[in-house]
Image (cartoon, rainbow, N blue to C red):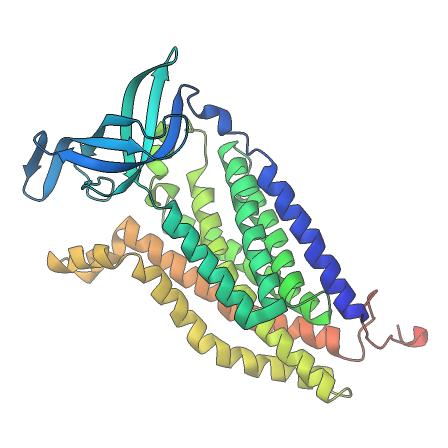
Length: 388
């Protein structure tokens, strides 16, 4: 087994163990769930819509449903459950016979006092999507795909078990998000690009781009007078006992976290190209490597900046449609805090993408050129002592 393969295998085992450990570590908020409730799945047998009131397209009131419990302590029991409608289409749901629902059974002193049909049961379909994604990734990517899948789950655990709980506990969002993003970036690059000069180049370029994005977001969010309440459910979070949270910093964190994936993509592409150039031409100079990295970066940036625009605007198409339908002038539209927040998100993320290309090219030129002092485990020509 080659030295490089051993390093990649070691990294994979380490991150697999860390992912498993994170999965079993409690996030510290599990005890907030009521102890007198039980969650299970159920099948809708019949519905009663007589108590639903409809005002135009808005429905309020409650839907009564007959549910057969499919698992758990009350399996095969049939209950009458309530489906409360709030008059908000994005939150409300209407059941029909044959649907599967997530059921919450509330009891007291061993006696059931309330049964709620909380929502349609979607976990089965979501699991199918995850398995399909994993299957195609492994079939196409093989070992690299398997490592990419491991980095995917490791990232999910870092976000859910570390980043989100730390935000809720009141730690500085910028410090937490930069730290966790650095760990995520290191894990993804180590698993996909390997522990090598290529990985080191990609990591340095990625972190430089992420930090630059954070600084831009800090400055321009203040200039535009944007606060964190523009994000969905932010105000609800404040009313839920977390009024101490700094939503502005959480909003800024979301900006560079959202663009970090594209930043990593660009830095890894540039690093891989520079590695190929060094392998093909071992005598290539610093300036030649730098110019090659810059040329590759220019090509990638043409599509990546548009990718961010499409990704962010796609989630707010209905908002844009509402304002267009009402004939709102563009000056008014772009001054609204929701739209301005998306402009900030898109443009600051794009600034990070623009900067990561030259920063990665500069790092790669230094690492791969012959005038760079080698690091342990990296095959690079040392500078003679007399030339230091």
